[in-house]
Every structure is written in C-alpha cells, then in structure tokens.
Image (tube, rainbow, N blue to C red; front, top):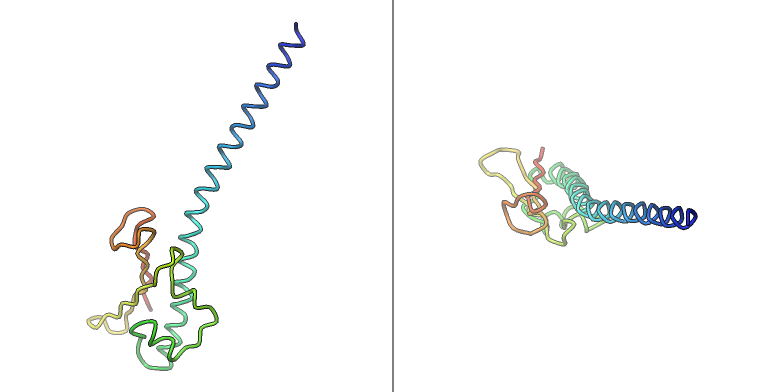
Length: 126
C-alpha cells in the first residue's frame, strides 16, 4: 500500500513538472515569434537606412521611394525593402525639415497608428 501511494505521488509530480514545462515552452515560443518579427523589421529598417545614406551621398538628396533607391544603389538583399509582415517599408521625405527622412513600417496590422505589436515602427534619418 505504501509503495502504491509513493508511486502515485511520484507520477503526479512528474505530470505537474511536465505540464509546467510544456506551458512555459509554449508561452516562450509564442512570445519569441512576436519579438522576432519586431527585431527583423528593425534590422531591415537599419539596413535600409544605410542604403538610403549611401544614396544621399551619391545623389545629394534622399530617395523618394524604393524605385529611386534601386536605380542608384544595388542591394544585396531586397528583403530590406519589406517589413517582417511582408509589407513595403514606407519612405517619407520631409520637404519642410531639410535633410530629414523617415522609414516606416505600419506594424503587424499594416495600418497607421496601431498599438502594441500593431504600432508603427519609425526610423528617422539622419
């Protein structure tokens, strides 16, 4: 009888630990996926900003759009032109702020002015 109680208690503990491990891993995988999309987009914005800086040095002005950029700068990876959600990064050249340009991703939802993972990600140059 004692052995049976110990065995049942041992099995219960193993299932509890396994359950906690499963929940922890599942939550971590889900959170990591969202963080990675943000990280990928920020990395791409940074690479695209460097390409825009090169364009500016050669052309004397910021590229108005991706077509302008590609006419002057050969990109090794054209994925830098899209965010992690597969949407084009927006080029915003400010005419009222000399020397200023923004690169913008509209976040997970693809719409301006989101919140959380849907928030816009803006990279200001210079």
